[in-house]
Length: 464
Length: 108
Image 1 (cartoon, chains in turn yellow, purple):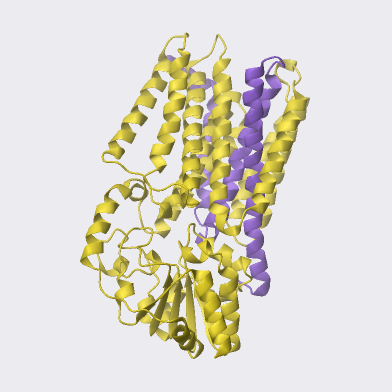
Image 2: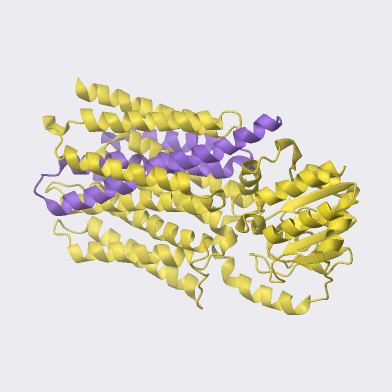
């Protein structure tokens, strides 16, 4: 009786995940979709707590389970509520790592109590769950470190091959344990655990910070597969369907993100190895002269323009300047200037990052232009103000076939009469390549932190 | 070979579930606007937190005097819960912003 109710709970959970994901992929129903999956998760968890009866035995350790649930819920909800909108990608990465850690821990425990009559496939799911879970955990932590600027990109010659060797050793050791006799060498199991963690670090370490969203999405998919392994292990349908669903959806999402940047996944994952040398050549080859513009002049130009388009990038997010930016927009609009925002699909650290940020500052949705409408409007625009964006406005993507970002759709800001670029310095963007836009005759540079510069612009315009 | 065939035969429903879920996941996601990539990733991230059920089972089945398993399970339940609760709350916060944006204007 109880077991059949539990099965129904799991069925409801699985269906709610599917419906939730479906609703999440449509802007109108997205929020409800999230709640639907959360409700399904709640039902599945409560069902497990109160109805799970393996072999007629009841659960032990209710106190500990309840304690852990409360601690986890408090940490999770506080962290999720406190985090700033700009740090959202880091947060998702941490949460993903927690899921991977959970999968790895389950596998460790299950390995410790493998039954006498275990099958090879039983061992295989345990090992696979542990490898994938710990790679996902370690990788997510590195991704978090990179996004928050705590970890720099690390490469050494031949790292790609070294990584493959590590992966190969992991697979061979895993296969040895699975195929080997019943007496499983424990030290080998922990060896695999150690190597998997190392591989997770090595896998993410060389990939550039700008590609972290793709990596997080990929690791997200990994954790889904680790979850599915555990689902296999416990013959638990809700874990299996949930895990596989996230595994395949995450994989597709990863590919979609790559497509939005017009790159292949392979290019993202191993492209960074060749990237550094290319950027060095370009930096020396194309360095020209640029001209600076003073805040007063910039304010003047913008105030007397008919139409201004703001192109926000990661610099805006770092400086937390979205509110100041909205203030400038309102001020210009009060002075009769037509102000719009042009949002590149991959501006910022994650697709949709800028939309989230500007929505937080109450910028109206009608003022956000997507790539194609924006490109149609640039030719009738007087001033384009670029706030900490770089690669998404780099003309090299259209006219330099040797550029690593060649082929990526960009915002064609050069069509506008004047381009003002706000950057902190002349350093190249995350793709590590020089931007010839900065050296064009109708481009002026306005150096400084986005928030400070915007504030000065506001003050100048007010005093005009 | 025979053992593999036996295994597939014995778990044929599982294989159906896996294969159908793979296609379902691809199908559900494939037409999503790029604006929603981040919330969708975050939502999917919360869903794989269902791994917590495994950690609850581990703890529930552990005998109360097996401290190693208890400790590992305890940590597993905590991190699993962080994944689930944090994931859903963060996704909700992201989507909440889209909603306030919509009240000002109407898009799509």
